[in-house]
Image (cartoon, rainbow, N blue to C red):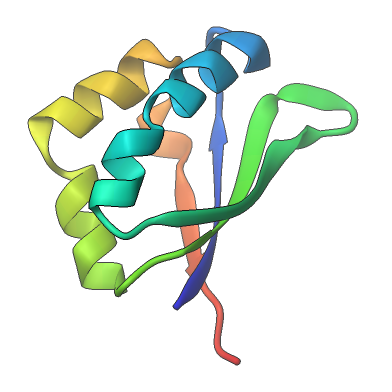
Length: 89
């Protein structure tokens, strides 16, 4: 299943990107394939990503783990702004 997610950042795109890329092994272990990611052209503090995931339930379970919450906060993600849209094909 494909999802589009967005989140606003408090520490800037380059900081977020560095931590995001360092988390690749975790994503592979959990069957999360990132198709694309980047920030808006006029706003480096709003990141979008397209991912292929096993299911929404699987993804929500991972996102609610304390270690994932901590990692996202360290990356500067403003958690209350995160949105995830499931694509129907």
